Length: 252
Length: 336
Image (cartoon, rainbow over all chains, first blue to last red; front, side):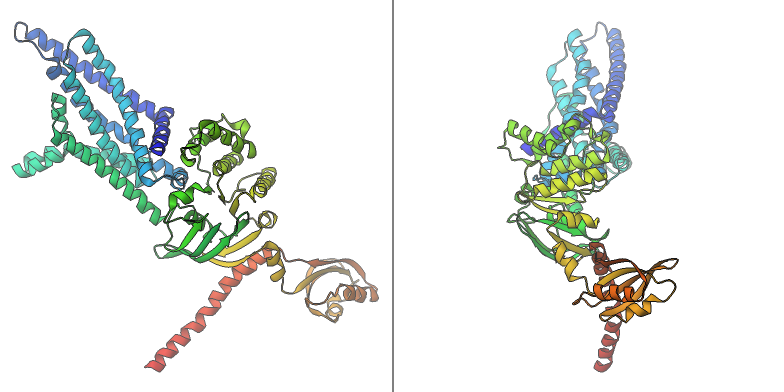
């Protein structure tokens, strides 16, 4: 555990001293802020028009949409976080230090995963400033926001775990980043294909889609089905990474 | 302390290390000598647990590096060919990270920091402690790499070309440092700089094309492989042919002209090893009334040995191959 934390700490630190970390954080804050503003003005407009009608729900009418947009933004941004994890160490030779230290491959992989997840949590933390404004000037329900963030967190962790694996297969971070982005994109749009096939295929494809599972979370529902999907993708990605590092050793 | 038995490493069809065996006793400095691509780095990587061997075993401090990698790695300090530094960390941050990774959890923070300071002092990098690794010169990077290797006081140090890229003063300092570490540590270092081996190592493994060609002390290698004694003589024979006269001296096997400046001619004389013919040669020249300008033995340096061993080996392979073919075809004929 101590080894995992040592490596996670080093990784996390790496994000905050590299320009890439700040660029990603800045872009995320900017895009999230834009969508937040767009949804908010639309929501305000709507609630003006529906005066006299029933009370409008900030959670359903506004926060849900913003978090849904955030789930798409991270598809684009997380590859930039994970692309360097292994590729850079392999290119610069520092991987030799890690692999000859008294730590196991699994500890290294978990350390790197936790480091990236930690940085991602910080990204999400920045967006909470926007949400906090809603709590100051309105009274949204807390729980749907919490589950929405939990969903975002799980969704991002899946992408990090897959990105880690892709980064471990190459020395070139640009290749790792591009490949991760393509995989992330495919996992998002795979459900769109569904409509052109039969209902069974559509069900399978939409189950595979990484963003479909986020919907319930953003509504404020924690369905074990969806949580399990995310957890299994995370486990699968980490498993592949461990295997990839091991294979690399044998191939030399 | 280190025992390697029948180690073989293949990358697909390519054999990088072929059936290598050697032992290193506690406190020894073993030099790993070979041309580029001979398999030095691969052998070291196997020993440090970076990659597994295809065949054979390696034991470090009593622990098998394949079966008990964590225990073995605790006892190894390793400097790879390129120092594994993180460019965005300062030297002290970097060493702290490595110390956390390599030292057991029982080591207290104060003790860890003392060891970091100690390693920085020993490698003379204390004044660079707050500098970022990316801003260091090649020599300093190398020294931080060495500091990283000896940080956790490992029993075994494996250094892949520790003096590569250093300036002459730093090379001497590094060699002194390595010599000073022997005794408490067992050291394997690789190099293709020959004087380094004779100056620092207690034993030498010469490796070529993945195979061990020789294992011995540097002195023994020099003595053993000297073959015949060689002398260098410079004579001012005023135009007459000194070679003929010199070849008549008893014990001389051959005379070869080496260099010539006007009437001053230098000869390389190969002689039988069991007798010292210098007096006879001097006398024969003086008797002729010529000028004897220089007379000295040509010692075979480690360089010559190295070249002889590594080229002999290839020569042998080439020579062995053709006779092998007819014999197989012959046996086929007889079988038929």
